[in-house]
Length: 150
Image 1 (cartoon, rainbow, N blue to C red):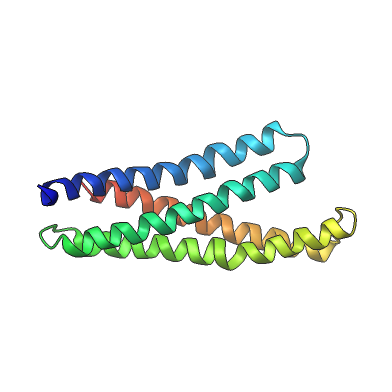
Image 2: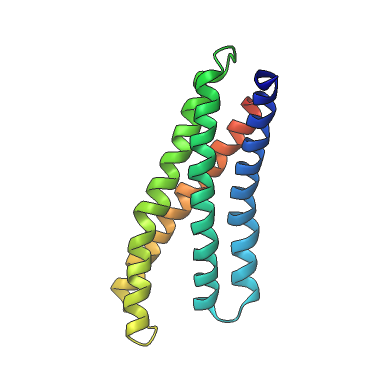
């Protein structure tokens, strides 16, 4: 009974993970910045949502790896495992690697009246751009995970 349920749970978890990635990155964050007049508040709220998304990614990725490790009959197993590990790496690098530096720059700016000098602004822009590219790669890997998990 449990072996028949595991593939369905795997598909459900993949759907939840991919859907949450796409919703947070391409719906929620843009809506926050387009709706709220205070960009600092929008950034703070987006940061909180991305933090939640990072933890969702870690939990989903680890649980999926456990499911896939035991699914020896799936012909796409190796590809799916590589995809999940790559998505987890994107989370670790993008959120847990780059985001603390971005938060540090925001804290420094807040201490100086919310103003970043040109060097800080450039560094923040570079970090934000790198994090955005990593998030895009993770989102595209999620497409592959959904398509190949059938």
